[in-house]
Image (cartoon, rainbow, N blue to C red):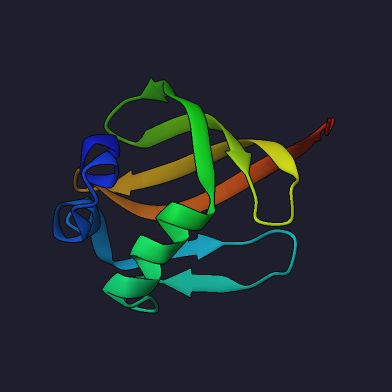
Length: 104
């Protein structure tokens, strides 16, 4: 998944997700679904939200947990943990936890 993202390979990246994948944004309650984004929007987001120190914390057949430091367009940075629940080997549900980091 990370290799596909680093190579900007949208097809390979989305192949990691179930057709009924959902991403819950706790801050707003919004749910994003697979297919909500165009390929161009996904590529733009990858350029806009800069991730550093991405790493896999844990993975098994049921779950994938990752962590990264993310810089946002407004100049803020957060430590972001993503929890991906898996079904049949593909990502099915995603949630995040985010901690603001000091600026400057």
